[in-house]
Image (cartoon, rainbow, N blue to C red):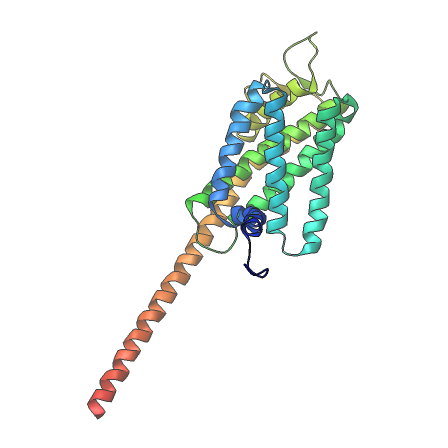
Length: 267
């Protein structure tokens, strides 16, 4: 076999390198991400007992999705390097905190989590609003962004809690709470605030915590309205373009038939 011919090893390596790009350029990636987020938000986080193995798997999947998404979606190598560096730093802080168990890194870990979630939300928005008609997968991507907003505010509350442990009233006095247990409650508090349900079992006490809760409640109302308006306008625009293309094709066919008839009449 000639050395110029690709070997099975080379073909396999090429497929592996192409896999992240294929994942993010396919709209079904948004459905996969939604499934992952639903499991994380509604099962893994509330249980808060996934163990070291479960936490490792969830963190590894999130890391892979984030890094490959940045590399794929970035329009230039400079942007990919800039945002990739931020993502790598954020993920590195999380893994160091996870491996060392050092509580001193809780604030940096919360900040890194917030940054990573924000980057992933931006990547998904790029996929949702890219050129093309609105599909069911894009609607699922919009839901992903909504859940990511809830997780982002959960990270904000965790950051506030690390700096000010008395910033929130959990309705439980005299009972210490680790940051891991508090983070699970903040995801719950964040989603109830985002949807403006507000059961009242967890309340913001300090002004900064209340300000963030109010900002999240406003975002929870404005984001779906703005998003729906944008998606509807996109769908109307691409339907109009499709109609114009089909009409232009019909006009060309009619013109061709008219020319053919004229040629026959002259002949």
